[in-house]
Image 1 (cartoon, rainbow, N blue to C red):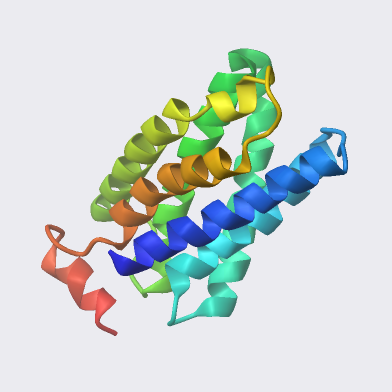
Image 2 (image 1 turned 135 degrees about the horizontal axis):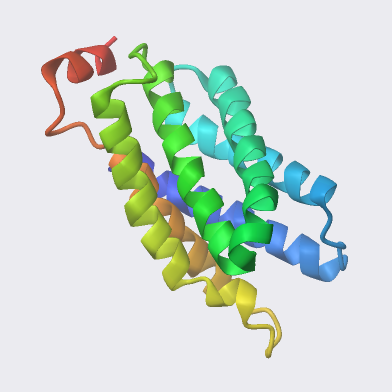
Length: 179
């Protein structure tokens, strides 16, 4: 669980830094900016999932998952509106991370245990993400970066915990972890 906690804190710090960059430099929201944001930020989440075994593959896989999740936001937006599109993209991201984490440790990226782990990560992290979504939807006050840090860390932790926790899954799944 130490990796899950450290990963959530690292992504919380990085996400808060990105929030600062968007606000301070008044970056205009565009599809290109959103895709670059998702790809670069979430490459670090891939690194967390790969640490210390395969950092390069984790960075690349995280970037791909971040790009796909960011693109899904733009696909979901016309159907679901802003808040639900971002929550749906966030949950899709954790399903992709579930497959990535399995692949990084040499397990098949598509299997019942991987899907279960991804669904748990998506549900728990999606609920946490939704519960702190006011940081993006409430623009009545100046940015509070300490709140953003706590909120981002809180949103990332359940996903990392679900994907990195090793007890309670099949013996074959756990054997792949020991490689």
